Every structure is written in structure tokens, then in C-alpha cells.
Length: 193
Image (cartoon, rainbow, N blue to C red):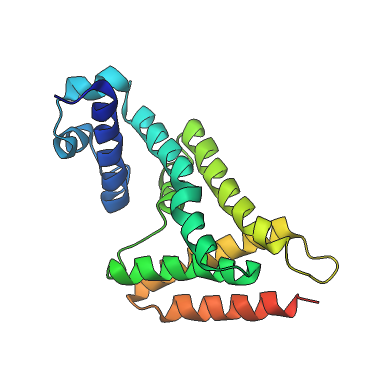
């Protein structure tokens, strides 16, 4: 028999999948409990409502960000600039392996629920901030020309990635993503001393 932690994790994991596949608004409590294989009473034992499930999903994403998104490419590459592009290459891989159905889950939730849930907006912002900080940590190791702020550049890298993912998904082609990343590489390289 599954314990309380396992049941809660099943609910959060199922919600995470469903919010990614269908979106937050299109996912009902009944969808979550069905996917999790639990009764609705189990969900309400842990969560007051669907927004509280969303908060748990966003906390899960934030906890997984470094070990799942950044550690693998950072371990593959030693050069700080190449680490950034290894992260971006992993996003490209996600696009290809999902036949262009992939979209950044945080970006999607930011568009859908950020305006209606303050707690979700704060967690979405924290997820983006952690993403930017990981990229800025690599940019700060580069010999950048004077006046180039790693934190500001990291926000630009995030913008390029999010926009590239959305365009590739819309076109069902990696070409828009690849073009965006090529321009980003040329730009960042131009900033090196």
C-alpha cells in the first residue's frame, strides 16, 4: 500500500504531466486523480484546491531545475560558454524527441496562470530567476567586454530560448530554434574580450 508521501508525489507528478500536456485550465481535478490512480479524497487530503496542486508542481519544477536541466550539460562541458550552449542543445533535443510538442513548462504556465494566481506568479518568477542565475554563473566566468552584465545577458539567453522553443513548436521544425541560437552564439562571442 502506498504511503502518504507516495500518494502526494503521484498526485503532483500526474498534475505536472497533465499541465504540460493540456495546460492548467484544461486540466480538471478529476483528470489529475484519474491519472494518479487515486480518489479525489486523497487529493483533497493534501491540497485545498487545484491552485494548491499547481503550487506544488511549480515547487517541484524549481527543485528539479539544477539537477535535471543544468547539471547534465554542465558536466558534459568544461568551457562556460559551451555549457550555456549545451543547455540550449538539450532544449533542442526535447523539441526533436517530442516531435515539436515540447514547450517550456514554466513559460507555458507563466502565460496561462501568472495573471490569475499571485502565488503561482511568484513561483514562476522564482523558477525563471533560478534559470537566469545558472546561466549568469557561466557568463560571469567569461572575459566579457566592459559594460556587459551577466545577469542581464542571462535574461536575454532565456528570452532567446523561450522564443526559439515557441517558434520551433509552431513551425514543427528546428530551423527557427537553430537560427535563434546561432544568432545568440554570434552575439555572445562578439562580447568576448
